[in-house]
Length: 191
Image: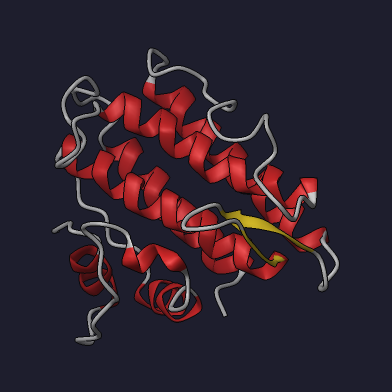
């Protein structure tokens, strides 16, 4: 199971990479995305934080109508603000997930149909956005990012039945002994 400790270690990896690239050009493309590094970092903050609000809402039929997209701080912010915002989002996520009763459920995905899952699934749901978009930003800034292999392996195992692996351009993770590389390949990315 992917844990709060795993989530915070992934957060530390992402923010460490962003910090290493703080003096870089955040207006350039984030990896292979059309978004800039700053736009992607802002989206990463929103997409990491929003599922915590989905869980806190306890909604079973849809995302809250005030959900994703609400938590933007603006791509015009300086890198240190984007980094601080991501740390803040991570702490909120852990606080919401760790204080939810074990039988708490809420909508976690809306595609292909709304799907409610237990609170424990929200950490890897948030980590998916965090680690992949964190990588996109790091790649755009030309800095290395290598999350802890054990945390990524637990993430892969925990999310194996998530519907995202059938999204266009994504495929189920094929294990080669390199969890991070395997995750990147499965989501159409590269080191």
